Image (tube, rainbow, N blue to C red; front, side, top):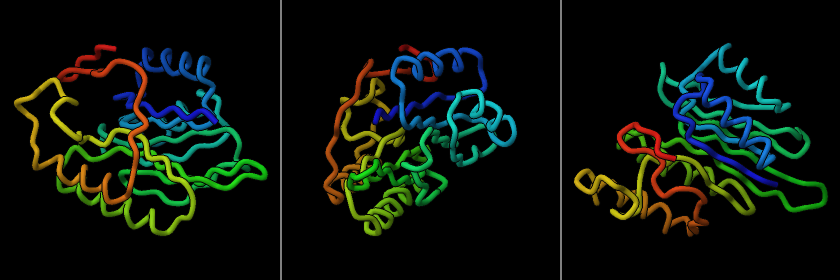
Length: 189
């Protein structure tokens, strides 16, 4: 099953809709996670409906910031286990296979709220049995090489993220695409 998680930085614009249609057509994701759509309510439902998925769950944006949308097509294989302001946890089970879990994350840009994310994800992980994929925008980095703004890098803010990764025994599966996709709000890729 293909899974695509994208920080679309606003799902209301026509450009985003074009890119989403291309992503869906070329990757055919079984699960599509959109973080930071910045759209809520009936407008969000209209957009989700137009994307062509049979099922979805949304964590509402706060005003015009944040939010998480997770869309999928086969309701018999995907179940929503838990929603949180910073993540959605799904159970995925294909016929005759062991279930696995997927958390789509949008970590708060606010440090103290993001620290709660690590704690909540640890608690949720203890309640599940099976493999867990965690993907999204954590609004945190592991080390200075992951930013082009070296002056803004804070070891103190990264420590919690690194500790969480190590404590939970998570592995970085990498990514495809450009290393930096935006600089100070300007799209580069």
